[in-house]
Structures are given as C-alpha cells and as structure tokens.
Length: 123
Image (cartoon, rainbow, N blue to C red; front, side):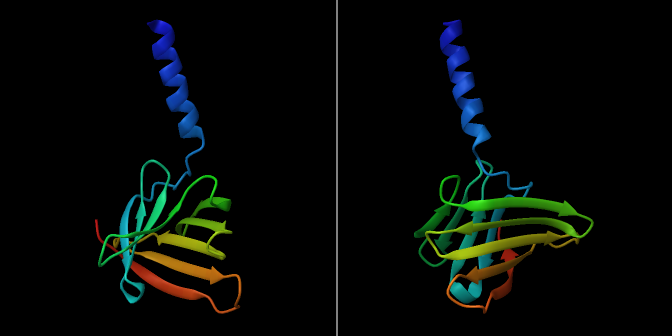
C-alpha cells in the first residue's frame, strides 16, 4: 500500500513539473471586441473560449506553446509565449495597480500589425 501511495504522489509531482508557471495570474479576463474569455488556471493552462457560448476555442498548455516566459519586475508580472498552432505570439501583463485588468498583445506571424488591448477581469 505504501508503494502505491508513493507512486501516486510521484505521478502528481511529475505532472506538476510540466504545468505552465503562470506567475500567480489566475482567473478569467474578457476581450469584448473578440467575444473572448481568457482563463488562466491553477493547473497551468490558459483556455480561450467564446464569451457568448462558452465554446472552447483553444487550450494553451505544455506541448502547444513554445518560448514560455514569466517575468516579474518593478512594473508588474508578464507572461509571454509563442504558439505554432495559432501562428501567433502572446503577451499578458499585470501591472502594479489596484485594478485586476491585463494588458494583452497578440502578434500574428503573418503581419507586423499587433493587436493591443486591455482585457477586463471577470472572476
């Protein structure tokens, strides 16, 4: 029985090693222009869904993102990564302020024009 428990604990710990470190950013933010909700979860996934229907558009996780970086400095915490599947690079920043909104930049591979917006905290 002890071996079974030890194996279960090792499996959970190993799974946790591969989860994205979201730098403490957890919750759901809404991009009203694109009917999009961005949910950052404790299990290290970022799930993009349609606000109006709840339909999952894409899940960003280990194996689907490259160049994942978390940066914390005197201006706040930022997360950035690339995704070959969506052909875009993403950046989210939570500045040091009392509001919970995130600055988001989406950089499509096929153009030099980025999409910059502030996504509003939902929950």
